[in-house]
Length: 411
Image (tube, rainbow, N blue to C red; front, side, top):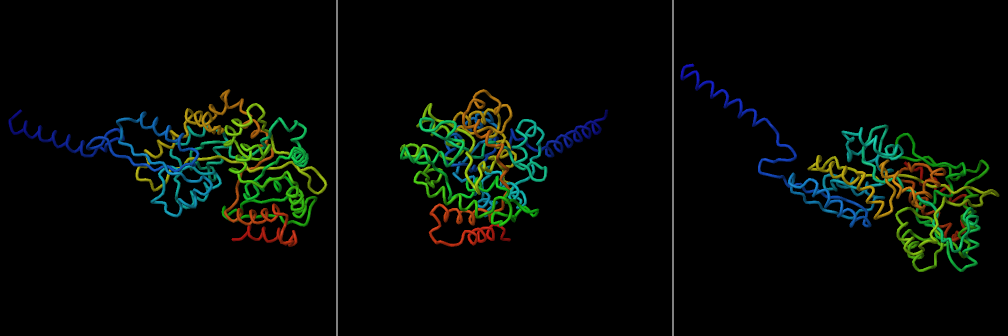
């Protein structure tokens, strides 16, 4: 080979190598100047802060050296996460916890992208949780819990197994003991319990945004006014206490409340007070239109979403997967008593022996997946506030029901 030919060959090889190197993108594990800085903001329930900080630490340890992580936790209610996020998608959290009834609106608004690799999630999570995280069969979020429902807590020192079958009987027992039975009528979520198994209906229209509602119906074996009258009779009991979830727990600690309707998130705190006397069961029945009606409930899941506008989408997805992984769902149950959406974690002996989880599963026979539009909440809360106060205005029950339904179905 001549000198000129040799040099030409060497030059060609150098050009090829330089071109190949220039065209190769750095992986997540390497950056052009070392590990990249990955700043992620995470929204979660205020009560989850200590747990999430622990999960962040294990995530950073697992991926040590692959990036310089700066993970910031900010408390944000799961119940109105959608509204806050859609107010500023680009400035919102990279990873966030939210209730499953918000998934359709978040996806429609472009806040969530479909999960790219959903096969593993579908195989590892409970079918109901996957359904709750999906819109028209497409998975948009990572299932976190499968326990977003409510049931009855009661102190076994006061109530028998027969007592807890009837709300009226429970109120009678509590009244005789000078104690209270608690339920939150400021929340339409809980008030659904009275309407759900009556034949009266509420739900989403095909547009996925507006509601239909027949809670003011004047036809059928149970009419809207029948439910309203029953609520007034319950509210009139000296043992009934209309309390928020926080006030319910305060009543348990003070000894004033010996039973109440809540969810698994309070299991650990209630057991700390009642100890071996803590009981948990499906909701009782109540008397309506001369018959016993099993109280209903909304069911649902908590989900973890990844903001479609995240500056670090791949790392945000890895963090979401880490938060919702089997081991961290087990940890969440141990620390917070929340029921896992992961099949293996849910089938663990610890979860299966939980009184709260068993009660939730029992109540699931009388529950439906929460699917209502945003107009549902305020009108129902306004109606139930009037019932809790004993209808102080004296207005016609039918007129109040009509006004409530008008607000619920408003477009």
